[in-house]
Amino acid sequence: GAVVSQHPSRVICKSGTSVKIECRSLDFQATTMFWYRQFPKQSLMLMATSNEGSKATYEQGVEKDKFLINHASLTLSTLTVTSAHPEDSSFYICSARDGTGWQAFFGQGTRLTVV
Amino acid sequence: GNSVTQMEGPVTLSEEAFLTINCTYTATGYPSLFWYVQYPGEGLQLLLKATKADDKGSNKGFEATYRKETTSFHLEKGSVQVSDSAVYFCALSPPSNTGKLIFGQGTTLQVKP
Image 1 (tube, chains in turn purple, green):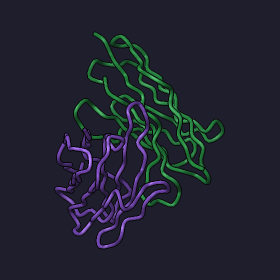
Image 2: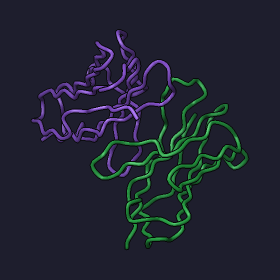
Image 3: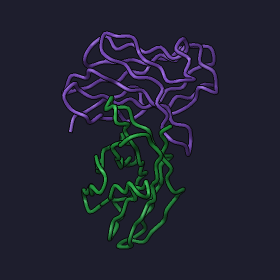
Image 4: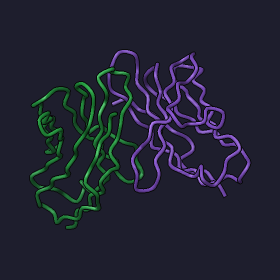
């Protein structure tokens, strides 16, 4: 299957700072990327959907000014958590699909800890 | 709205035991249904899928049947191995086919030798 690489796998940042998470499709062009968040022992919750060259579509309850998503190329999407707080600590997972298939491929996730 | 409910884990089994992980869903229309698996330190991988009622998805000895009447998609395997230890997620994709997935909370499976 297609490969999606997410970086970093773990990050610790201080409260009030911003952190950027990258999601890359390595061997296909990702016209659509999805960002999920997972709390301990809970489901993955979709945060936003981004299409290359367009503004992201955020799910209800997700602060678009706090979670900035950029999908400027067909192989890269970034999620920036701005002014991070301890309650933003979570596991963030991206997935990507091309324009032809139905299947979305997942990155390995990023564990964010805000101290 | 759309939602997925899975049985709580962890599920602990001995090698060669029979596995069932229950999954039920609520949805408008006819969603597609999936099981994903996450091995330690890795990303989610698609295990199997079914796109319409009575379809059976199967892969690596795992099976699940799309039951419209009971809104269920239970995962089964006749004989588990230690290497099957992972977290299993049931998910649905609404009929709009945007690629958006709605996940259950995940069930951790531990298989002991």
